[in-house]
Image 1 (tube, rainbow, N blue to C red):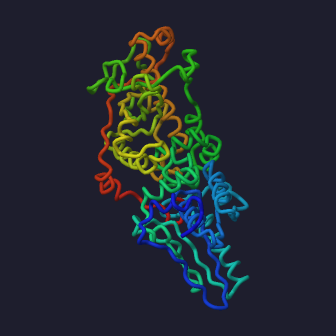
Image 2 (image 1 turned 90 degrees about the horizontal axis):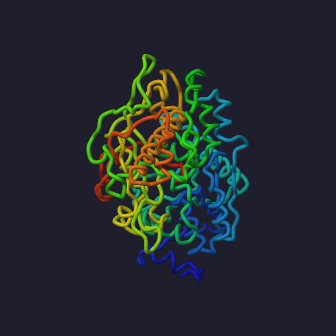
Length: 472
């Protein structure tokens, strides 16, 4: 058994009957043990296991980046270096993925043309292996792959060379998602970018769901702006998307940290006309349609309401909110929330949560039906013949603008709700709201399915499979 001070901590999650052994070295030959790492939870878990349980093994840690990896990736790599006492060999492209895209005439990757992973991850790693193989032609190479025991369908990078072999420590040790998460959280900490996205890797990706695009605009605004400029949009259409209406501070003079979005009455919000039953569009006296209006449009919006006691003696209340995603159909929104809820459960350690019940108790998701005024002019549908990072051809800037306006609508409604509750600050500033952007027609809490049911749900099992070599 390893005498590493963290060995017992890692071994708690491994069945005592399971072991992982490296292949014996052929007499007279040299053996290289390579551990590709990406900043993802699974590959980080492999690095931790090798550093803690097999500290005597001379592992070479290798990272192949795209140049547009999520902020915080280098922190994970540095953590592996500190833990293992060995450097992580960083193989980075001379030009990042967005520059490569521009050089290729803005030819964007897609689910059918996944050239991004092949060009920036698989090919550089294979080139590195080929150079190593050429320098040591009689050597044997072992690549440690971060595929878990609960992923029997996944495969690692295939090798035609007979002296290169892939091994799967997580599978051989019987480690599943929950085990891997706990090991990484306890030893190095789950990377914070998992609060916004389901995988590590690029801040923009063809597989990102709308919620992840919204999160990326929040976390990586400069990078997302660069990514949006690689999309092929008509100039006049792009100008409309760049034209954002004034925010609540500009319209009321009240800073957003003094405001909250609408809150369902089930978790402390004042009962409103939209609480508990579907409403219909009701235009306020400060707005009316005109001959130039292009009509309203209905959106279904999901908001995370983090709920609990702020201090030990205080009441339970909403203490943090975040717009998660939106859809033009309730069915589409609920499908997105299935994926979102599984991701929250899979990364619950990030929030210090240990059970499904605890997650459901502290994280409430509100579903709101919003009538967005003049929507066909303000957030017009994408024209035909465009190319975007999203497989449904929704431009990144359209997602940014739509989510921005929907959030402003919820802040408008939240201010009205607080004024109705008797808050003097809200009562003073609510009168300053001019030209409302939209109206909440309905709001209630979302009831998530049990995780055991979700993981076998058709919407989950039929979801597109990401590249095997992408970060996890």
